[in-house]
View 1: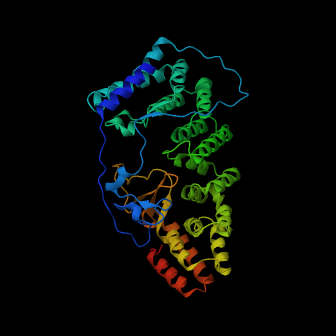
View 2: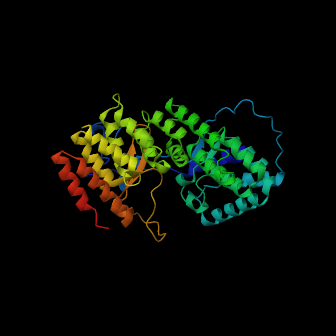
Length: 418
């Protein structure tokens, strides 16, 4: 398998060539961060504030290479010694076939993709007998990113390792689950940790959450020390956001200094408003800069229609005269403007893969943070619109600031009546 993967790497590098990224520039919008320009060095705070990524500038955002040699974490001490079963020749042959893709034509052909898919199905069909061969490959820490390969989408998987992990999910049983847990404890690939967390949660809800949080914490610690330069760790924040308890809220608070947008957006997205107290504490932190305060205001406003504690926090800040005039633009954006979200942007309805109206994607150099936004009008139901208008009414009733009152009235008018 090692020789097969080496030949795969060599074949891919011979078959591909560097791609030039088209240059483009854009004008700032009225209520969003400055777009990426052709000369980002001239922009202030370029490394810590989001820049809109225009479609023609998508290649300017750092992307994973096709061939990846991942770092590993040491296996936790105190684990029982597991006797490894030698892979059967047939399953080892199937795994070797899956790793030995031919790129001599410059891309993956439809015929190659069909054969590859058949081999993956055959491997999965072996059940528990396939686990030793999959373990043997995963232990090599080699990865092939299909999204960086011409025709890679034909394979129906995001990457080579994720294909094997999904096969383990389909196989099920104690052997496959044990290998997923083992991989969770050693891998450093953010997207792989997220996939393992998802699959293990399906296998045994709640049982492996602590192991997952430990893995996320360890890998983010490595990233903070610069050991994973170039990696996008957004998938790890999505895992923490999905769990949504006090433990993850405390962890996200600690991560705000390094990943301001990822951590603050995750706090706002925690289920049942678990992260609202943390957002309030961010507003009260005298050591935090204006940027952190403004983002906390925006995310509180974004979820105020869902969680009364968030709207109460905004009202109390008004009464205490703790909202600077320049923060109102961010609050209004959270109430009626473009909403920030982690993850991959949804496609338009109908399954045609088109982009939703008003969709924007953003990139931040600091921490390699990437996210998207959608206007309230693209996603909100009439019930949500009514709740947002009610929050605005509450803020108007509490507000003595003439400028803020006028802005809130304009915002209220921008929401269609339910």
